[in-house]
Each structure stands twice: as structure tokens, then as C-alpha cells.
Length: 247
Ligand SMILES: NC(=O)c1ccc[n+]([C@@H]2O[C@H](COP(=O)([O-])OP(=O)(O)OC[C@H]3O[C@@H](n4cnc5c(N)ncnc54)[C@H](OP(=O)(O)O)[C@@H]3O)[C@@H](O)[C@H]2O)c1
Image (cartoon, rainbow, N blue to C red):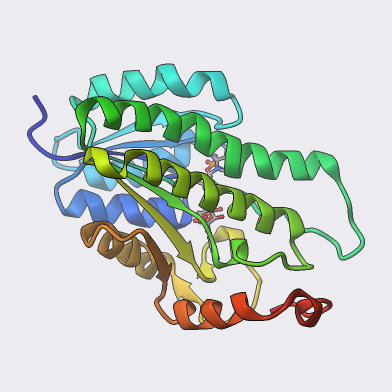
């Protein structure tokens, strides 16, 4: 029987996922930290586990190995002693030149950002449906709201994730399950290293925004909130006017 709440963070080795792990641990959550780089995961888990208690368990895993997600999910739930929440943070945004069209790069973006999410969140959804409780969180992006010329495939991957999460919410919302879509604006993490972007926040601030959204069971949360009015306007711009711009 679980004595504290249990969460799985997929993509916990850096950036937003690592910041979220530290904050949830401070709130007493028991965590499973998942990503490829075991050393980085251990660096996140080390301070959490200081003092003896094994509150953060580390699992090295590549989300593009889709068939490994279901058995690993089951193993994690067993080791944690329960399941209350999953946050899918894993994501990639490789640099793309303005004249580049590269299907291998595109496939990787969809494998990590979309299919990896489905492999993990389908399993979580089935568990939540059975236990009639639980929270599923997906980290989308403001980039998924419109198709932008700089990153057409990354934008498409986040749009696909948003739509998938909406479908899960419609399927599970009346069964005691909360599905939260987070749409962050630019966050200072390794993913955005060297980029100058507007309204940039820290990974800690993004983690606070995610925790606040989960607490109020938001359907969809822009993080920070300034992106809500901005994207509401950007969404209304007709395609013919949006063409050629990069906003
Ligand atoms: N930074 C931003 O401005 C921003 C804005 C909006 C949305 N987001 C989204 O927020 C999420 C977190 O990004 P971040 O900014 O925190 O970037 P980050 O620091 O680069 O973190 C990405 C995480 O994804 C994991 N990951 C990547 N490929 C993986 C794979 N094949 N298997 C397992 N894990 C994999 C990485 O772990 P390993 O490399 O150890 O595997 C890492 O933990 C992403 O979904 C991103 O699209 C970011």
C-alpha cells in the first residue's frame, strides 16, 4: 500500500522534468525518473534520496523503444507501490535549417514527442481507467498552436500531442481521471541553449506552473499565463496573413 503519492516523470534527466522532480520530491511525492542518461538521472535522484529514504527511483530507458514502455510501466508501479500521476516531459527539437527537409530528423521528433508519449500514456490511461483515478500530464508547447516556418515538424508533433491528450481527456474525464495539457512558452533549458526567445522563464518556474495546473485540474494551461492572451490572438490570425511570418 502506497504511503505517499507516486509519480512517473518521463524525461527527468534535465530541464523541466528534472526541476519538476525536485519540486514534487519536496512535496513528499515518491518518484520514478525515466530517461536515457542514467548518470544525469542519478544526479537528480541523489539529493532527493539523501538521508536514506529511496524516494526517487531511476530507470534508464529510450522512449523510441516503444515495446519496452508497457512492461517498464508495470515494473515501476510495482516498485513504487502505486500510481497517481505520470508527466511525459521527454521531447526533442533538433535545429532545422530554413531550407532543410530531413525525414530521419522528422521521424525522431515524432518518435520521441508523439509515439513515445502514446506508448507511455496509453499504459497510464489503462491503469487510470481501471483504478478510476489518476492524473496524466503531457508537455505540449505554444509551438503546437500554429505551424511555424522555423520548425514545421516540431510544431506538428506538439499539435498531435495536444489532440491526443484531448482525446484521452474526453475518453477518461468522466471516470475520475484528470488529463492536463501544458503549453509552455520558451523555457531556459538545454533544449533552448543559446536561443534568444521572448518571455523566457526558468525550468523551476515552468515546474511551478505545471504543479499549479495539476492542483487546479486544468484542462490546458499556458505556462506562463501571458501566453494565453498572446496565443488566443495568434490563433485568430488568418493563414494568408500568417504566411512568411515567424511569430
Ligand atoms: N524549453 C522550452 O522552451 C520548451 C518550451 C515548450 C515545451 N517544451 C517541452 O518541454 C519538454 C521538456 O523539454 P526541456 O526544455 O526540459 O528540454 P531538455 O532539458 O532537453 O529535456 C528533454 C528530456 O527529454 C528526454 N529525452 C529526449 N529524448 C529521449 C529519448 N529518446 N528517450 C528518453 N528520454 C528522452 C531527455 O533525456 P535523455 O536525453 O537523458 O534521454 C530529457 O530528460 C519537451 O517535451 C519540450 O518539447 C520545452
